[in-house]
Length: 314
Image 1 (cartoon, rainbow, N blue to C red):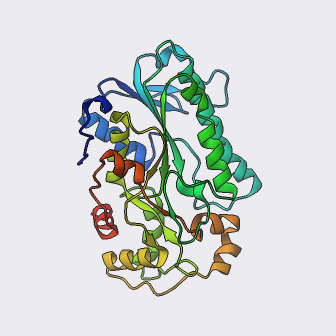
Image 2: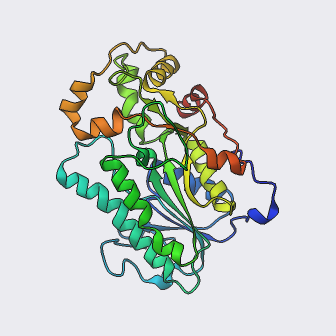
């Protein structure tokens, strides 16, 4: 893992205390725990099942309180990654409520718990998503861009607002607006590979919509960088500096797999199969630039899509 730090010493603080993580069992959470362990940083996980060890704490974000606050004392930083999966599910009204609650309610619970500690952590990194920008065509988007329209954009706005109690308590809050994370694990790429490996892949709709992606290595590296760099605050785009169209992504993945990709999925068919989710998660266009990370001095290990795909498919 290569991380480029800011040269200004007063803006950087090494992570030397405990880090609290929720959503640590997903692809990103597992990779992040591995990186922190390699640095000798203790991790405390919030889990919704029975704890399996002393470094796990059971919590229920819908309960009041979600957890005994005293158990969280002594954490230097917290990373909140919890949230139901956006892709792979038809958005029924019930599932839309689950998407909203799993993000907004859980973030409000975490932020409130941390804000009430005698010694709150210095930093809270909260997962968000580039879905906040909505469907924006070819417009280049950075952290200063206004939110867009649609269900996902509305969820993301409420998601980020839910962390306000932590901000008001003086905690530095980073809203990690994740793009499509490409890694060897149960993420977006894993859903694509079976079809593409059979030579049955193809563009989605017109293929002209922009996909803003980021490698798993760069995602974990950027989270660690954000923990250590005090200049990063508020919204931060966790995307690689070279977004591609869906057609370009399709060609790159097919080339890596040495398979054809000649069977496009028409937009109308996606809408019939997946409803609203197709328009907002598969056909929407978000051409996102990671300006905050680049300005702060972060150096991407996999700045181009072929490099990221090769790393994920090793």
